[in-house]
Image (cartoon, rainbow, N blue to C red; front, side, top):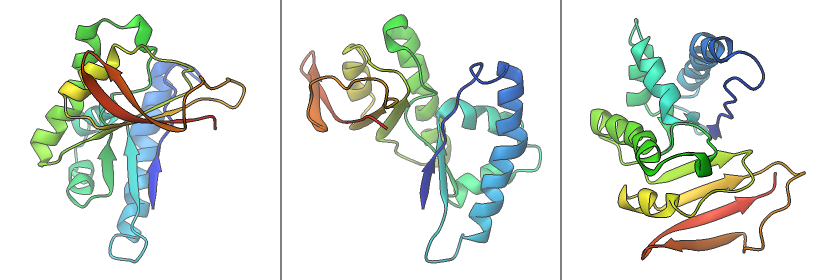
Length: 171
């Protein structure tokens, strides 16, 4: 089983309260479930943005987060969190992608996919940044109230002679 966590920092509660809940409740519970299912036919992999994993490792006093990463229970995708990309500079977006690259280097992983939810659209300027970071796949999901752009459900998004594969979903 693979689960991607939806993370709204500052939307449902203050940034501190939401972050604390993830670091002190959700991640430890995901590790617990992952350990229970570790050597079964249905192992559990908990995936979230790289920023949250970076924060969890900063607070990993007992080594449980690091061990869960080594055991394949916890994983990150290529982006730090969901953002409004049209409000970001290229340098800021590159910094966000660099967090997953640092985690990849530390743990001997190769992240090739990214996920964004709840934002109805993104700037094509993210395509070359993702492609240059060897990100091959972007999954975009928007709320059902948001109409999808007139694109196929799976397509190649190209910009500046770079491309990534995108799945765009409405739920």
